[in-house]
Length: 98
Image (cartoon, rainbow, N blue to C red; front, side, top):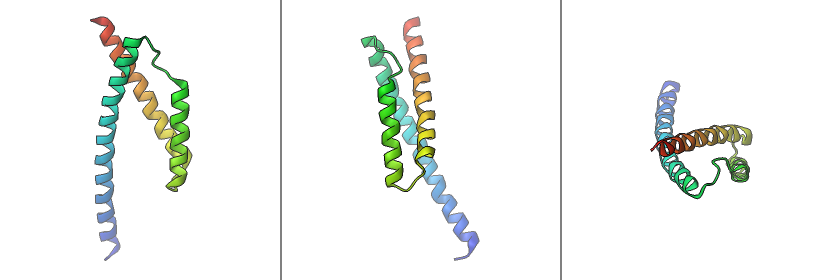
C-alpha cells in the first residue's frame, strides 16, 4: 500500500469519526435541552459549577487513560459546556416568552 492510499484510507476513517462526533453532539444537545427545561421548572440556575468541574475532571482522567492530551479534552469540553449554557438560556428565554 502506497502513501497516497494510506492518506486516502485514513481520511475516510476521519470522515466517519467526524460524522459520529456530530451525531453525538446532536444527542447531547437533546439531553441538554431536557435538562434545561427541568431546571427551569424547578427554578434551578443554568450554571452548575460543581457539575462542570466534575465533567472536566472526568474528561481529563479519560483522556489520560486513552493517551490523549488532557488539556485538549478539557478545552473541547469547555466549548461543549459553553454551548450547553447558551442552549439552555435560549430555551429558557423562549419558554418565558410564552
